[in-house]
Length: 157
Image (cartoon, helix red, strand yellow):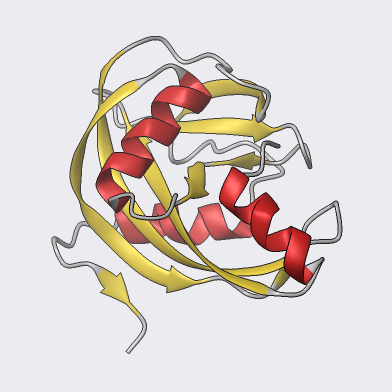
């Protein structure tokens, strides 16, 4: 998985110590209300598209970029669906991190899904009642929050 250059620079100073990072993700749906998922190269799990914000990057622009880079799909953002904090995690390379995630609901407007970079092994559409396994736990929660029918953004109170 490509690590942003600014994180590589930070890691040169802090090693594997925990970092607090800003992330974005999206539940992308098509005209048939299917959900776009990618099977991650790092762990083989299926997941919604996600990524790390570059310094100074706007969250909406970042997730549109991530979706295009990882799946070849073009989207329009519908709304911010949830604001959440991940549990602390350790990546395969030993780096520790915790993420503030801004998750968007997005609609497919063009492009056929395919792995566009080395982050995904497969990319495909799935019916919400027939999601593949294994599916990242964080994706399960973000899908539920995005598709719950509320116009309000979910956040823990």
